[in-house]
Length: 153
Image 1 (tube, helix red, strand yellow):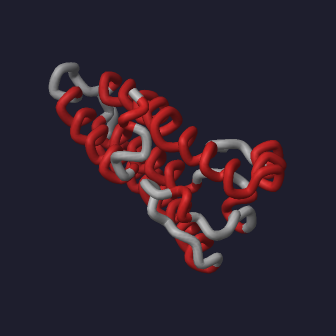
Image 2 (image 1 turned 90 degrees about the vertical axis):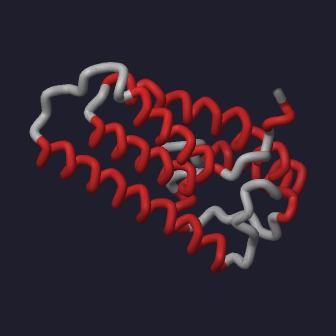
């Protein structure tokens, strides 16, 4: 299974799960929710996800470090300010919020069940390998950061 570590860029993983959610939504009837409520919740969650992800990218750019999720050993700086004081993974949190928005739009319980699967996949095949790399690069400084800030929220 370690052959999957750091292989798929997280946006591609999120897109895969979004397609699976759409396909799954055809298997079970959607919840009876007003369209305006579904769209409002979806747009709010997706917008929040874009803001959170963008804040992460901007922080990385300001620190002049890589945003390439498949090459964590290329990281040149430990970013712990801005959005990174709240979450260690704002870009992945943003993707999660976007998937929650998609689930809200679909209003389908089966589609919603795939959201935790995204979290499990990202934790195992993206975040844990990144954490190993950052520990190797930044040692105790990264360990102290891990103790201060949660992985997701």
